[in-house]
Image 1 (cartoon, rainbow, N blue to C red):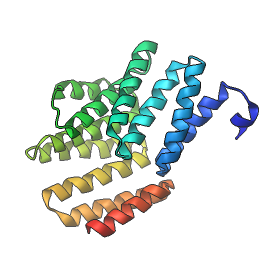
Image 2: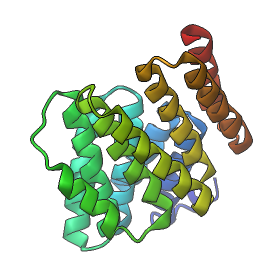
Image 3: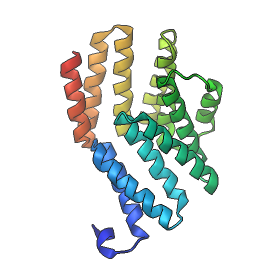
Length: 223
């Protein structure tokens, strides 16, 4: 409200960018998309590509959770391109590359190198996104085929450890949501339900209201 009231084009994209991220973490995806798109447009007007890549990463995540995978892919690609152009945020760029591989798996396309993805984790020095990389690689391994469930479980355990160590509680909720999916794939309904409940408790603590509502519906339907 302060940024909009000021009429200052420099402050507006920052406000929309971080409001968009806040909306995403609360689970209000339409609101997140709207603000991140506005931020992208305004950052482009003032040639501020450093944070424009961050808004594109946020759009990639938002579109993915909305089920709009082509738009998600386009946003991640744009984030990678902008990061290269500005020569900043290499860890963010690598996270987006992992996210692009995740979309490839959904499309049954396997033309990516898993070893390169592992390397991105080893090169990362940004603690807040550590678990994002690890968890997404675990998801990729789980969904490549049915033969790597145990390997995927090791990666999700690493993600949980990282989020506990770094104090990234919302991401910890994401970890347990994924862990619930993994146990369902294993046929262990009891552990799947327990992990989904744990994710709900964490989201409640974080004030992620819409995510709580979504997972509570899933809990009722699936179990």
